[in-house]
Length: 121
Image (cartoon, rainbow, N blue to C red; front, side, top):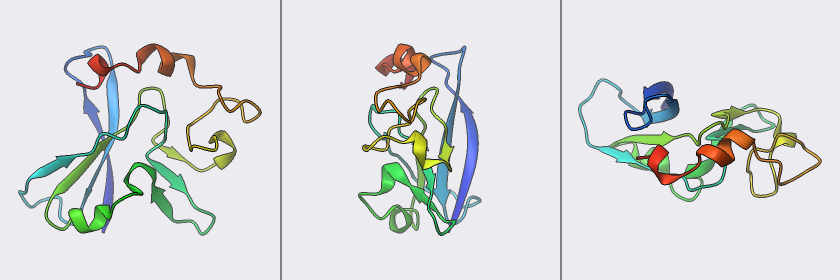
């Protein structure tokens, strides 16, 4: 299975660029698209595991690779949140990205300002 990292442009918030990942086993094949919206917390899309593999955090509750056999799966990142995290000390108990490992509620201030529905549409 191939995971690609693509930078997309959000037409509704013309001042910003949104990162997202596309999961597919064949990027050249035309097929339907499933857009998975991961929720409202500043969770990164990928977390590096101790064994060196990456875990797709928002897709942890379903078999995204099985879905990707028939669909292109798109998962947008939260604003002002890293797409990929290797240092898990910057993740809270709920896997939210925090700026201060000593404070589990230290969300990026720009994330708090920009995390509303109009920026995701």
